[in-house]
Length: 449
Image 1: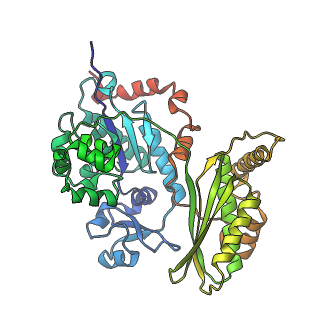
Image 2 (image 1 turned 120 degrees about the vertical axis):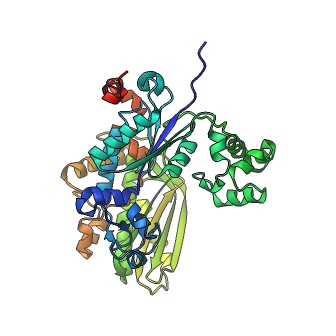
């Protein structure tokens, strides 16, 4: 009787992804220190830096002027988010040919299930050879360098990737506890500062310390998470890779205006236009909101904010925008400073059960039909073939908004899955040709036996 195979999960991460994308888009940057700057003019803080820039001390979160001071020969690139999305999709298109299960996470990372690959593809070939082929192919076709880690769980695989950068590291079965023993618990992706402090209070600074604590103590202190952490620290956390596409619980927008706006009515017009766009996105995902908040940041970086909780979940522009305007006028009373940034958040989301029909029987169905038709027109004719009054007024106020800048591409997993496979359902349902493609990949010279 055969025993169940141990889970083998591969984590692949694009190295300094935004900076690598800029180099892929401009070959003249090859070999040079490069960093990508955020902010309204692309010269705010560093949001990505390549390895050459990091050698000079340039790092994420640093002011761009400071990066230029310590690395005067470096190159500052303004972000091109649409291109980052395109290159990300090309990278995932390559990855999906190498495993039956691919789980994309942020724009530059993904997990692949390699649990049975030694029986179906590797045929006793070293995993490092197979991963090298993946990395080399992504470099040839997308021009993006990647690092990878292979382990018994997605958490450990990601940690292996972080240790390996740049390159590849495999944590073989039975080696998990020794690998983790002297590593700080801070290295575990997703662990919160409060939990770090609580573990430190127990004397647990490393995973080795955690492994030596009684599991009952960790369960009492942290619940199920504490038990999982104890198993992880002892090398006994062996989880399968699953693609779970969940409804988002919040949608938000943070936009720094092209210039400090002293006209509050113009700022309100922008806020209403952005809320209309966000509401349309929610309805396309068949969601509606129960809570709404607005934050205004002024040119001196001070802020005011307000929120509203609806008695019933809402999906109509008229209701949401009226509420947003009320919040805006309440918090802007007696304010005198120019507006620098506008942040809108819609959260506590609920399902909106409606199917787009020509003439719906309910308001929800009619709005669903309108949003579906509008979205199709936008795809065919451009970004803004149909506009609300607020959106049209915004363009009249300032030509900058005729071609709005792309937003930062960190999108929910649900949207990433749709872009990859055209549906947010189980991707395997539409990947019946995967076996053929994998067979084609596995026939490459170094894998013949």
